[in-house]
Image 1 (spheres, rainbow, N blue to C red):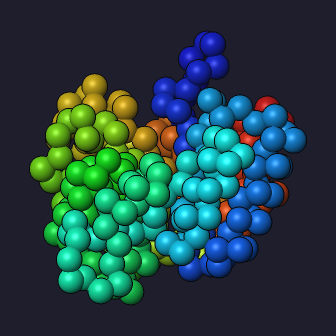
Image 2 (cartoon, rainbow, N blue to C red):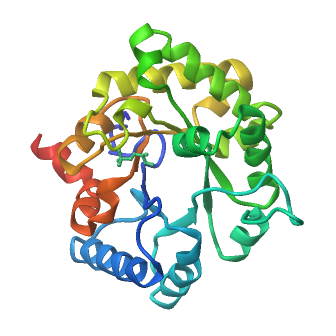
Length: 271
Ligand SMILES: O=C[C@H](O)COP(=O)(O)O
């Protein structure tokens, strides 16, 4: 992520916390309150670094109430959505419902959805389009498993997922889209892809978006890295030119740790 001489970033940094299947609706409120207090104490400038949380569906109404009631500048989103608008799809959640709850974002194709729920590239493309249809910005997750990484085909593999996910989008949608590169071997394992690994893939993703949608569009799309991010490695990853933010799992459940990740710029000065 490069900065201009006035300290502005090329793209607004985006720090997102994916709570996964953690935190019931009472715990979720407490976590968000603590995060907001911590960031407020630290005088966090939300206009400089955007913050979002992705709670379980059952927490979203409580999160909405807290965000509205306390006028918090924290965005929130769903961890998944249906590719369909409504109907006989037991257990699924429509993008329309997420929109109605004030969700700004929704995760699409997290590796845990791709593997545990066998979500295909075609389904994820339909979900990406459904998100846009309902006015919710998709965060499309891509990334390779350990075997692919060891075989050295991780760039091709990840770009194939990307191409499938963005197929049929307009340039405006591609510019608004957020892409999260999450090497599966680094998720929840303590194994972190090095900053250079994150940069290699984010640069490849941006180059692919440039091919597909043009340079002006690709310059706007925000690219995140995710996988065992902590406060002590966030700043180094975010120093990379094409990495615009982080998708944080485990560390987002600790408000002090997550707030420190959000405040990565204070670590940039001292690193
Ligand atoms: O969505 C977040 C990613 O799966 C990373 O999770 P993690 O930070 O626990 O490794």
